[in-house]
Length: 275
Image (cartoon, rainbow, N blue to C red; front, side, top):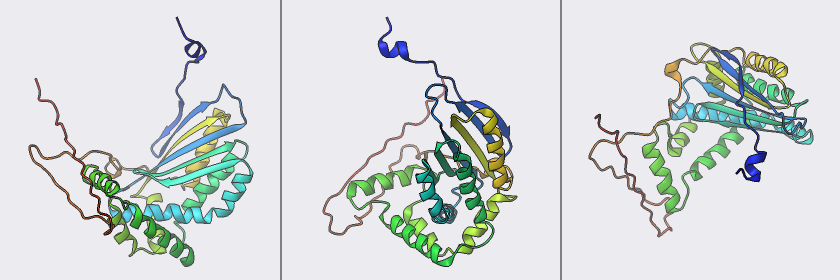
């Protein structure tokens, strides 16, 4: 016998793939339950060469932070209009989410993408860059944590996650970078042999007839970038430890006054032998 929760549960339908092309995909699912005048758009920008070096990771982070600074006025207006957005660096490139009242959402989405793309045209303001750089350096200094258990968890990930780039390496790379470097990196992504793949999901009360032209406008605002070569895609994977060996990483506390210590042990089971 079905319980109340099971009886009321509606069958879920997956999003539909409306567009698939070398430099992007569009997925769509219209809200048929709440019928609120709101929508959400998620964009995963896969960037060629993402994670190839500490410098590359920092340049993408700087591009995000500079763009967010340039969008400060839009951020306030979006809040007043019942919209919100989040732009961040990801392992594969960049991620953007915009949500809120659907009649104003497309304009904000394209404004954010246009701001990102415009970084390829000229170096950003030196004073703005200095603020962003100082804030990022402070964040990298504190990223591993100050407590022993925080540092142990951080260093374990550094040892075992292949795409992991340590904060110390990123901070060192940051010191040598300039606004011209950010411009060059963004420009390289939007032209061959670089590439950007825009994977977009549209949900809420925007229908397919609205989602398709919005996707086309987004790709056009990115200046129709080339597809990302397979060899230039970031890969998330765990490091395979050498058989029958012990690897030990010991580090002093970052806070000299901390008398505590922490130990994390990791065992990895290899693939099962063939029968």
